[in-house]
Image (cartoon, rainbow, N blue to C red; front, side):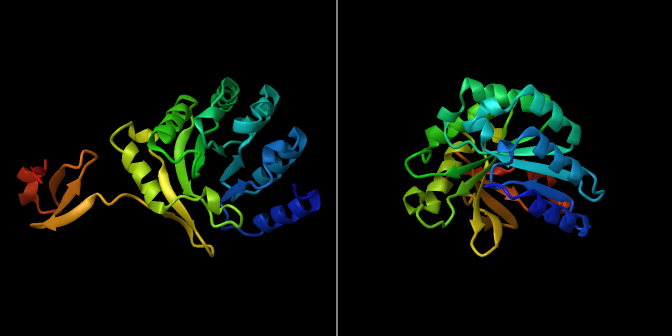
Length: 242
C-alpha cells in the first residue's frame, strides 16, 4: 500500500528541512507500481531540493512485471538524473526475455542498475544457481551488488539458511567467475545496526611482518605487509606449500 500525497508531502518537507540528507531512496510499496504522473511528481519535488544529490528507486518490477517498464516511463525517469535503481532478482527463472528488455530500456536511459538478492533456502542457496543468476544479471547490465542474509521476519524462518551457507556461496563464486559477478554478502543487523559484510576468511595467518593469504584454490601465499622500501624485492609474494 502506498502512502497518500499528504504523507509524501510531509516526507518531502522533512528532507527539504534537513540539509544533511544527500541521498534519497524511494522504496517500500514498490514505487514503480505508481502511475507515471505520481512518480514524476515525487521525483520533481525531490529534484527541487538543492542538497539532494542522488535519488534511488528500489523495485522488483523488472523481475515480476517487466511490461511496466515502458518507453514513456523511461523517457520521464531520465529527466531526473542522477537516478539509480536497486532491482530485486532472486532466481535465474526471473531473467526472462521481458526482464532483459526492461533492463535494457533502463540501462539505455543511463540509469545505473544494481541487484539486491536475498539468500533463500531451497530457492537460490546453491553455488550453481547463484552463479547462473549473477551471470544473467551482468548480461542484463545489472551489477550484482548485495546478497542479503534473509531478515529475521516473523513467518520466514523456513526461508533462512545458515550464515555459513552464504559464506560457502561467496567462496564458490570468488575466483570461479569474474569479480563483477560476486556480490557483497551482508546481514542487515537487527535493531538498526545497518548492513554488515560477511566474507570468507582469506587471511589465514601472519609471518615475518607479512600476511598468509589463502586463494580460491586453497593455495597459501605470503604477502609482506610493510611500507619499508627494502621489502620491494619480495613484493610479488611467495607461495607457501601447505
